[in-house]
Image 1 (tube, rainbow, N blue to C red):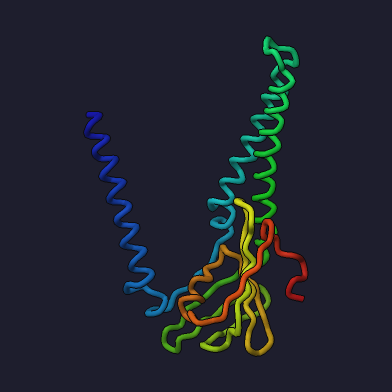
Image 2: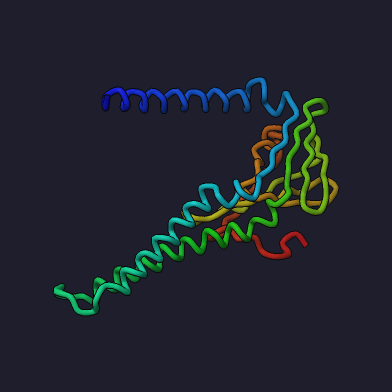
Length: 208
């Protein structure tokens, strides 16, 4: 019975992986490719905050709180030779985990205004993209985007974003949780430059 369950689990996981791969192929270069059919890409609030970044931030906060309780409950005098070192080590772990969790949610909240309500609609018939931002709607075709400036984070935990400069002098910003790869696929020859930021926070009034 145990062997059968292991067999079903392994092949079930393998089958699920193959199905995901086939679906990804169909949606990227197959019959549902954004270059062939009209598709709409939008990030929901639930998917945004409950994605990998949000889950890891939550886990880090929970671990930090757990270590705080350990610090409180460990008596100041123990049989260890240097009990103060134990408290110091636990305190460092508490600071590291809590700091990572706070940083993750701070970045999520910082980028959310630039993700909320944003959608990208593909129009293969005239090879254009409709980008709906929080304050306007843009219809972009070949040549409308003059250049792209990417701001990439240096830290292991951080976020990136791109600023798109248009030929008419306008510009807009998209964080990395928006499907900007669709823009790259539609308009692959746009000049590209990049700069570094420690964590990728978007400064208020950046596009003002």
